[in-house]
Length: 245
Image (cartoon, rainbow, N blue to C red):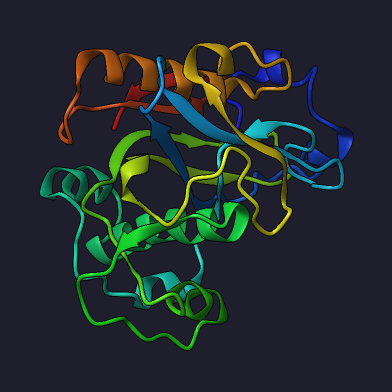
C-alpha cells in the first residue's frame, strides 16, 4: 500500500507489479493499531509478513486484512463514535463503514489472538466461522473505542490493491491477558510490542506504515480526539497525494 512509487519499486517483487494495462480495482481492507501505555513509552503491536505472501512479503505491519462479507452482518452493541462514523462513511454507506471497523477487529483476533470487545451484553450469534470463533469466548466486539487515523489506497502499478482504513485502539479494550508476544494464526511472524519511537526505524517497513506511525505519534502527543482528521494517501496521475480523512 505504498503511495511513493519511486521509493517503493526498490522494495517490491516482480509478482507485485501490475502486468496488464488496466489498473486493478482496490479492495476494502482494514488495519488495527493497538497502543499500550503501560510503560515509559507508548508501544504498538506489529508483526512480519511471511516471505510466501504475495502482498508485502517480509514487511513489518499491523494486524489487518480485507473486509469479509460477514463483517457487514455483525451488529455490536457498542457502535462507532459519531465523529468516526461520519468520517469513515465518506464515500461509502454507514453499514460498510461499520464492516470496515469490524474487519479490523476480526483480523486482529485471527492474526494476533487478541479480542477487542466487551462482556456486558448478550453474545451476538453468527454463522460465519471466523466470527463464530471470536464469539465463542462470550465477548462481543466493540467499536466505540476505535479512532480512525489514516486511509491509504495502493498505487495503480501494483498487482494487488487495497483501500485500507487504519484504526487505533487503546490496549485497555483487550479482553484477556496481554502477552509480550501474542500468538495468532501464524500469518504474522515475530509478533511483538515495540516502542513507537523504535518502530519508525524498522528496516523492513513499508513507506505507508511509516507515514501512519508518524501520524499516530502526532495524535498521541496532541491528545487528539475522535474528530481529528488523519492522512489520506493515494496517487493521482502518477503522483502521490496526501489529503485528509
